Amino acid sequence: MLKRPNSKEATRGAPWMRRPAALHAEERGAVLLLCLAAVLILMLMAWVVMDAGQVTRDKIEAQTSADVAAYSQASVKARAMNMLAFSNIAKRSIVGVHAIYESMFASYGIWVMARYAECQAQLPSCDMEVLAENLEIYWSEADNDYGAYGDNADYYRADMRALDNYQRYISDMAPWWGWTEAVVRAQRNGATMASSFPVPQGTPVGGIEGLPQQVINASGRQVPFNFLSTVDRLPARPGDFWAHMVDEGMYGRETWKWEHRLNTDRHRDRSEGGAASAVVLQRGATTLFSYGLSRSEEDIGEFGRPWRLVYDGNEAHWLRDTSNITLTYHADASYYDAKRRKYSVPADDYHYDDSMRSYRPEGYWGMARAEISFQGEGAPTMWESAWTARMRPVVLPREFEEVGYDFNALYHSSMLHLSASSRMQGGGGGSEFFEDLVYMEKVSRGMGQSTIDGVSR
Image 1: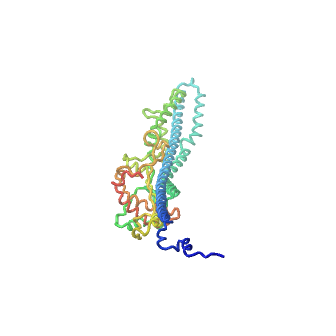
Image 2: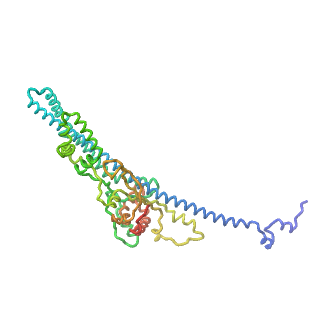
Image 3: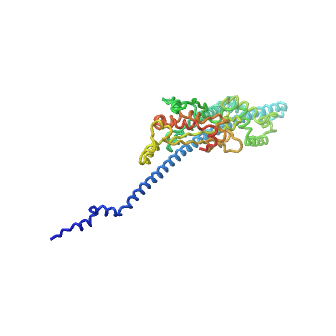
């Protein structure tokens, strides 16, 4: 038979049946409250560390995309400069071969005629058989090789025309080639928009032409729509035949002087009396191939003009013409939305509405600059393929002031190309990042001469 417990025994085993005084004295579970508070603090700290790490990583990626884009663009332009130099060397070689042939043929004719005159004066003791052999060689040369490679020069002119067209093509295409390479490299590193300044010649179209003015209107205080007319071009142009092919390309280089001197000595040693070599390589005080070069200019024409560097003596202008500034933008709408609400405990710290959007960017901007650099011996020249790319500070002290740059105008000039880069990867032409474009408009207004100097990136 089971025994029924009394009331004291039942109360002793059931805490919820105890008296209030007994419950007040109970200490079990007190540490749990401290653990919950600690877990909340640790969770907030983890959020801060994770979000700060992600934001830092995104900022580094934005800057990396700008660096990669700038260096890629400079590399393309350096490669184009090397191609122009290679073509210059090919032109120089063709002019040299043509000049040598013209001069050698003319001097050979002079030598034959001189020998003929001597034989006429020495008859009957002169050996007419030897003279006849030389005359036969001369006329055979005139009827065959000279007709193909000498007088009409069609053989050389076709090659020179092809080289000249190639140089013009490279010069025209290099700015867009470099810009496209910069945008693609930036996008592969996570950039939503990217562009560079100076921009290539031409204006992007397709409903985005009014974007700069819309951004200025939405930025608050109105400013003039100032922009820079500078376009991206290689610092090289076609030069004069005699000034840049002869003086710089052929006789201005010690290598050619030594080559001609060696050939002169060989020819003089093997020719009879040195008459032929004297006519070929020297005429009075005129040095080397004067006859052949004159004929080369007539036969080859404007296609023989080599490309030369453009330098007006102003170092700031040279830095402007040999470098590009790249802007990149990485969009992430969660910076001030989902990520911000994590820390709104117990309520929002302030009220945020649409009128404040342009003060809080939803992404990161990056900026970098790279330039082409001549790594050969001596001053830069277009007769040596020694051009390469390197990074450099965005602005050196007083650089913008000396070239008449303003960062706000620079930003205006790049805005359409930023929008075009967004469309390249299926975006809406920058309209979805309009507030961030307005944000950069406000920032760029504060980057005057006193605040932009010395910016490295």
